[in-house]
Image (cartoon, rainbow, N blue to C red; front, side, top):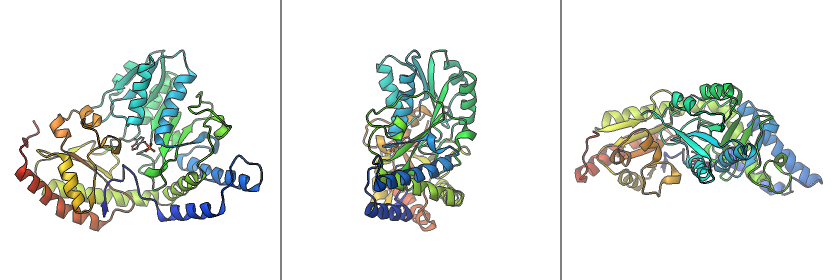
Length: 385
Ligand SMILES: Cc1ncc(COP(=O)(O)O)c(C=O)c1O
């Protein structure tokens, strides 16, 4: 198997799974219980919290565990809008993950005015448009750090400054950025930041929201006193243990991993551009998570390319995993100005910690042949314009 869909999810790191199975065998206490096995579980959760906080440049009490990156996004957005009921406006971008876009759609139905800041053809937000959209009614700005489909990195520090000058809270969805680039909440200047374990070689079903000390936010889920009364529900202890271990690995091998993945992605990108005619690279050339490559194979249906690659054991994606089964073209590719027929020819390849030189060699052997064969039978127009 050649797995090039690490933005959809990553395989569990063996060190993470080892730590999780040790924990499963030895600890089952409820972290809220006051006797030793409960206290042990709480202590283990707090150790993981500490590691994650340190990786982000935050303090332990600023990390709230959630059931996913999606929940962290929902919590940040709905929690702040609930905390400021007199403010009726929310600003986000046109290329957010559905976790944010669908939350924004929900808010619109509840009478909140939402501005979706447009992006240029590389996927970078229009800062002037964002500035003009701010009013005294704006409760929150939420702009993602790195895009899941094309990898574009947004000017988060600049948005933070703008938000601070206007006294508005600012959240960033860092689910794709975390683990692939330096993510420090103080350098970024954000008030809230979402992350998810399964994108960093940790388990699925566990995420976290960083909330800067003093930020006014209501819970999304009510119940017991867990997570400093900000997220009720017995903690997913085993998930948290895995998340902590995955974050520790980022601290230990983050930069080395990043350089290697970027080198492999560069080889793959150059190889595709050299060997395959009529391809169009989507996204920023430089301000991008470089292990993410998105190409239009003009004149083809991406799904045909995906399925042909899958028969060779090579797994890629046609868009974000969440919209994979949708008939619509990706809202991200639409927002960067691709015509629907071009958007429908796009394949995303996302490399990760376990990608190898051999993987890239095999893809560069198989892909040109697949594209050539499919083009021979394609009835679509091959030109972009
Ligand atoms: C940018 C971004 N935000 C949020 C999410 C949702 O995270 P989770 O799968 O943990 O709910 C994803 C997952 O693909 C993502 O890429």
